[in-house]
Length: 325
Image 1 (cartoon, rainbow, N blue to C red):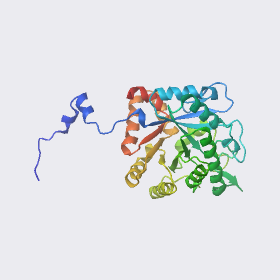
Image 2 (cartoon, one colour):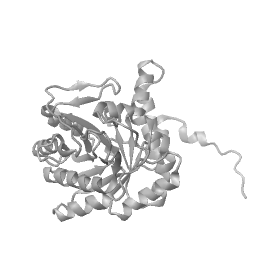
Image 3 (spheres, helix red, strand yellow):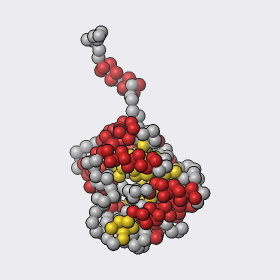
Image 4 (tube, rainbow, N blue to C red):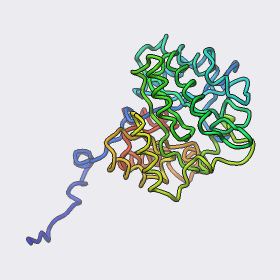
C-alpha cells in the first residue's frame, strides 16, 4: 500500500471559498416544513411561554402567516388545530367547518399552489380525554380510533389539503386512511405518517401550546419506547406496507440513529420532526446568553439532514430561513 505522509486535509478548509466548494451537506429552506397552530374563535394571536416566538394564530391571521412562510421560500406548512369545544368522540376534528378545515380552505383559496398544506391527524386536541385515540372503558381503543382518524383525513381532503399526517400511533391507521381517501376520490392526497413516534418528554411544550395533555394515564401503550430501535423499524415498515408516502421519525435530535437506519433500509422519503422540547431547550440557552442561537440551530438542523432526513418539521423554519437565502 502506498503511503501519503504529506496528505493534509486542511487544504480543503483553507478559506471560505474552498470550504464551500467541498461542503457535503447543504441546508436549505426547501428542506423545511413549518408548523402552524390555529385556535378556533380566537380574535388575536396568543404568545406561548414555553415556545417563545411561536403563537396560537387567530383564524383571521392564518392566510397572512402562510403567505409570509411561503415568501421565505419554505415549501410547506403543517397545521394543528385547537378547537373551541371538545367531547368524548372528537367530533370537532372532522367537522366540515372545523378550525383546521377552515384554515385549509382559506389558505388554498388565497395562496393556490404557492405552498404545500399538510395537516396533523390526531384526536388529542379534540377529545375531552386528551388521548390520541378514542377512550373506551378507560383504555384507548385502536379500531374505533382508526375509523375516526380516517374521517378526519377525508374531511381535510375535502377542504383541499395536500398531505395528511397521522400522528396517533394507532395500528393500521395508514391503511384505514388510505382506503378512506381512495374511496372518497382523493387518490392524489398523500400521507406522511408519524411512523416512529417515540414516547418522549420532549413533547411537553407542544402539549401546552395545543392543549392536548392526557387527562389520565400516559401514552406508553401506543407511542414507541425510545429503548427499542428494532421495533421502530417494524413500525416504519408497517406504514410502508400500508401505503404511506413519507415516513417520519419523531423526535429528531436524540433519534439520529433511527433516522439514519430508516434512510439506509427503506427507499421512501424520510421526514424528521424536531419537536417542541428541542426548540425550547435551544431558546432557553439562547435567552441566557450561553449559546449563539443561529449557529446552534444551523448545526442541529444540518445534523438532522446529514443523518438522512429529506425534510424537517421545525419550529425554527422562519428564524433560520433568511440566513439560508
